[in-house]
Image (cartoon, rainbow, N blue to C red; front, side):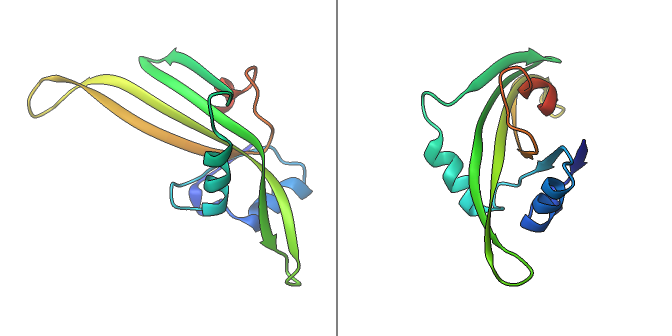
Length: 128
């Protein structure tokens, strides 16, 4: 499996991974691939699969949508559609504020394009 930063979340890299049958997890930044985010949010609802866990002192909620269409142009200018799997992990934990010494809730959000479809059986391992 290859793990890539958000700089590599683009069509040519996805296509390269698919062509070579490389498994991957590629960071997807909040403002990148707007059409993919739009499709993810449109498909997300009460029946969207999710996984919740306490992991290393953090409460995690992981949601995902498989098979999101993403259209790109190839080297010849022809449109091509790839199907991507997007997973989002939201975390919450308690930490001591260094300035006030008060305990406060902290939050983070991580998102990746997964080279393999996500399931209840594989999502936690792929994200952590």
